[in-house]
Length: 112
Image 1 (cartoon, helix red, strand yellow):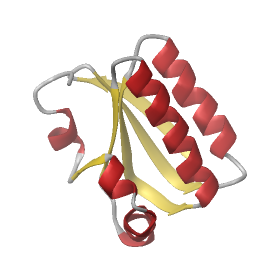
Image 2 (tube, one colour):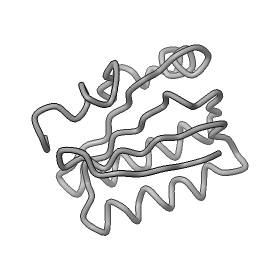
Image 3 (cartoon, rainbow, N blue to C red):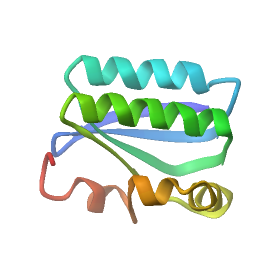
Image 4 (cartoon, helix red, strand yellow):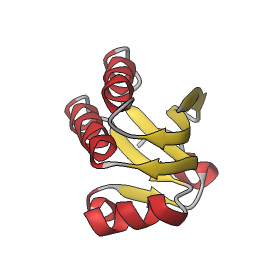
C-alpha cells in the first residue's frame, strides 16, 4: 500500500493506494494515531486508489476514528468505489462515518 498525505483546508488528507489488509493495517493505524496526537485530528481518508480493504483495515479505521473524536476531531472517507465501497456499506461503516464523494467535498469549509 502506498500512502501520501497533505494538508487541505485544515484537514489531513490521507490518500491510500493498493490494499489495506492484515499486512499493513497495524502500521496504518499507528500512523493515523500519530498524526492525530501531533495535532492533526481532522482526517480525510481518500480511498480513490484503494483496491481492497479487509476487516483488519476496518478495525484500524475504527481505532483512528475513536482517537480523532477524543481529540475533538473527525475522520471521514471519500472517493469510494468498487469492492471498497461495497465493504464499507456491508460493514455499516457508512452509517457511523461521514462519506463524501471526493476530497474537495470532504474538505469544503475548513475544519469541522
